[in-house]
Image (tube, rainbow, N blue to C red; front, side, top):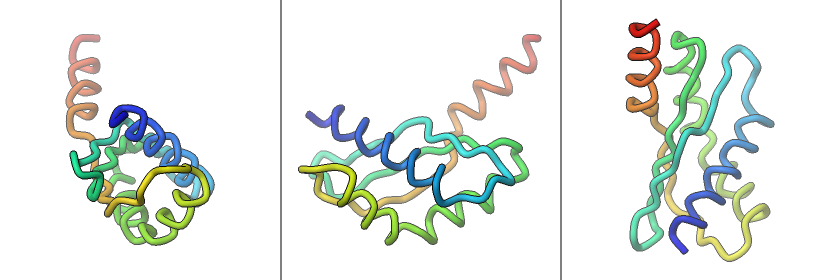
Length: 102
Protein backbone atom coordinates (compact mmCIF):
# COMPACT_ATOMS: atom_id res chain seq x y z
CA UNK A 1 0.00 0.00 0.00
CA UNK A 2 2.76 2.45 0.96
CA UNK A 3 4.63 1.71 -2.29
CA UNK A 4 1.51 2.50 -4.34
CA UNK A 5 1.04 5.76 -2.46
CA UNK A 6 4.69 6.71 -3.02
CA UNK A 7 4.37 5.93 -6.73
CA UNK A 8 1.15 7.98 -6.99
CA UNK A 9 2.92 10.84 -5.21
CA UNK A 10 5.93 10.57 -7.55
CA UNK A 11 3.75 10.58 -10.67
CA UNK A 12 1.67 13.54 -9.45
CA UNK A 13 4.79 15.54 -8.52
CA UNK A 14 6.33 14.85 -11.93
CA UNK A 15 3.17 16.00 -13.70
CA UNK A 16 2.84 19.10 -11.50
CA UNK A 17 6.46 20.17 -12.03
CA UNK A 18 6.20 19.49 -15.76
CA UNK A 19 3.17 21.80 -15.97
CA UNK A 20 4.28 24.55 -13.61
CA UNK A 21 8.07 24.87 -13.88
CA UNK A 22 9.74 26.99 -16.51
CA UNK A 23 11.78 25.28 -19.18
CA UNK A 24 15.22 26.58 -18.21
CA UNK A 25 16.11 23.25 -16.55
CA UNK A 26 14.94 19.69 -16.82
CA UNK A 27 13.47 18.55 -13.51
CA UNK A 28 12.97 14.84 -12.94
CA UNK A 29 11.29 13.30 -9.91
CA UNK A 30 13.52 10.34 -9.11
CA UNK A 31 11.78 8.89 -6.06
CA UNK A 32 9.62 9.64 -3.04
CA UNK A 33 9.68 8.64 0.61
CA UNK A 34 6.44 8.69 2.58
CA UNK A 35 6.54 8.47 6.37
CA UNK A 36 4.85 5.44 7.96
CA UNK A 37 1.99 7.59 9.25
CA UNK A 38 1.58 9.28 5.84
CA UNK A 39 1.96 12.79 7.28
CA UNK A 40 5.31 13.69 5.71
CA UNK A 41 6.86 13.05 2.32
CA UNK A 42 10.19 13.80 0.72
CA UNK A 43 10.19 14.11 -3.06
CA UNK A 44 13.65 13.71 -4.56
CA UNK A 45 14.58 15.62 -7.70
CA UNK A 46 17.27 15.45 -10.32
CA UNK A 47 17.92 18.70 -12.21
CA UNK A 48 19.85 19.28 -15.42
CA UNK A 49 21.90 21.38 -15.75
CA UNK A 50 23.24 21.21 -12.21
CA UNK A 51 23.35 25.02 -12.07
CA UNK A 52 19.54 24.91 -11.96
CA UNK A 53 19.32 22.76 -8.84
CA UNK A 54 18.97 25.51 -6.26
CA UNK A 55 16.34 27.53 -8.20
CA UNK A 56 14.39 24.34 -9.00
CA UNK A 57 14.24 23.19 -5.37
CA UNK A 58 13.30 26.70 -4.21
CA UNK A 59 10.53 26.84 -6.84
CA UNK A 60 9.18 23.41 -5.87
CA UNK A 61 9.19 24.17 -2.13
CA UNK A 62 7.66 27.61 -2.71
CA UNK A 63 4.77 25.94 -4.58
CA UNK A 64 4.05 23.21 -2.01
CA UNK A 65 0.58 24.59 -1.30
CA UNK A 66 -0.40 24.56 -4.97
CA UNK A 67 1.03 21.04 -5.26
CA UNK A 68 -1.16 19.95 -2.32
CA UNK A 69 -4.27 21.25 -4.13
CA UNK A 70 -3.14 19.52 -7.33
CA UNK A 71 -2.53 16.30 -5.38
CA UNK A 72 -6.05 16.38 -3.90
CA UNK A 73 -7.51 16.58 -7.41
CA UNK A 74 -5.22 13.95 -8.95
CA UNK A 75 -4.92 11.17 -6.36
CA UNK A 76 -7.98 9.75 -4.70
CA UNK A 77 -7.63 8.23 -1.24
CA UNK A 78 -4.23 9.76 -0.52
CA UNK A 79 -4.06 12.03 2.48
CA UNK A 80 -2.03 15.08 1.49
CA UNK A 81 1.25 14.93 3.43
CA UNK A 82 3.57 17.80 4.29
CA UNK A 83 5.94 17.70 1.33
CA UNK A 84 9.59 18.66 1.14
CA UNK A 85 11.44 18.71 -2.18
CA UNK A 86 15.16 17.84 -2.14
CA UNK A 87 17.93 17.03 -4.60
CA UNK A 88 18.49 13.28 -4.92
CA UNK A 89 22.15 13.03 -3.93
CA UNK A 90 22.23 9.30 -4.71
CA UNK A 91 21.25 10.01 -8.31
CA UNK A 92 23.78 12.84 -8.48
CA UNK A 93 26.56 10.52 -7.27
CA UNK A 94 25.48 7.82 -9.74
CA UNK A 95 25.73 10.30 -12.64
CA UNK A 96 29.18 11.37 -11.46
CA UNK A 97 30.36 7.74 -11.34
CA UNK A 98 29.00 7.22 -14.86
CA UNK A 99 30.99 10.25 -16.05
CA UNK A 100 34.16 8.95 -14.43
CA UNK A 101 33.79 5.45 -15.87
CA UNK A 102 33.38 6.71 -19.44
